[in-house]
Length: 138
Image (tube, rainbow, N blue to C red):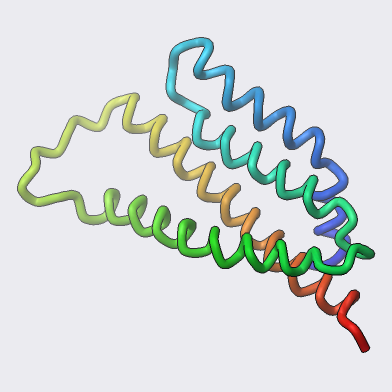
């Protein structure tokens, strides 16, 4: 990501937090499961944006971003693997359940949450690189 893309996401951190929280809580209140994963990932993106509010001038933000990259990267890779493994190669010894509305909405929610998670990973890695370039001692 370039600097303007980082600023565009970080600038809207409060809105991302509020929308993510609403998308996460609304399905819990109404009793259906669509949106819980996407809302949680959007809320976490908003939290990370709040951490990176002063990414241009605050020395050491790159360490937090690098820590988040190291901890979130394997999680993202594992979730991607689980998602695509379930779609492409279902277990052979289990009966394949009917492809109904529940499976469609869960797949859609998982897909959207993985897209948001990948955007979060790009943001965190970009902030780590750009902040290190700007604040490293000469």
